[in-house]
Length: 140
Length: 127
Image (cartoon, each protein chain N blue to C red):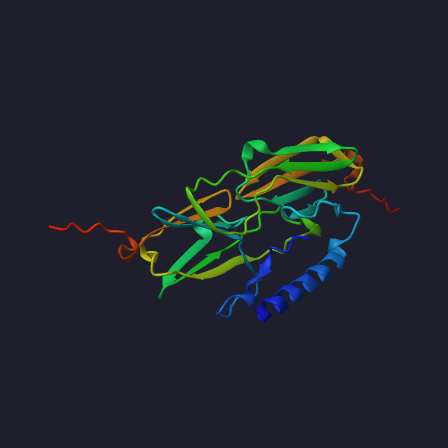
């Protein structure tokens, strides 16, 4: 159907715009393995929050690790317990790996990961020297 | 590139009054012996925030996302925009929309629709 073609082209154009927008650029971890669950990175003065949107993933199969300054997140999806014929399959089913480069001033020893509502959230603490400090200026 | 996040303005038949963008969730649809099973990916949505209506043979599914980020968290890199999910489906005569069973786990909504009586195979006894 022709109308569908235009919609897909429009979507590609939007995706390209987003990719090159300020929020989509390096160095915040644009990884080669972009086919896979969506990743969002947020930052507070104390930590980085890396979210991976993976509904239906196997909770016990997540592998979160650090390798030479990169945060590496691996996972796989649970088998859907449906006894039937697949009429339409849009949901991703293959194992995934996403890598995120967070920068040097992190403390990998203080990392927590939780999986809730289908989103894996990895909280990586910033190292002490990376945290903003208030410096008092004495005025005479 | 992940092109699976589709804006629902392209597929919805109704206008939205809210300002938040709506996305079309990915679904898997199975035909089973009992009827039809639909699985929808709704990351960030809890079962309290799912709304389902069946009207005149059309199933409409809406999922609201409550962002759970700490205050003052600055976005540094985003591949998905925050927003709600919306999708509607026309149900065939073989499927009974009024008797759907819905469960939700880890961001996946599962809808089990039984077959309508019309669709059931019935053995007729010849006396």
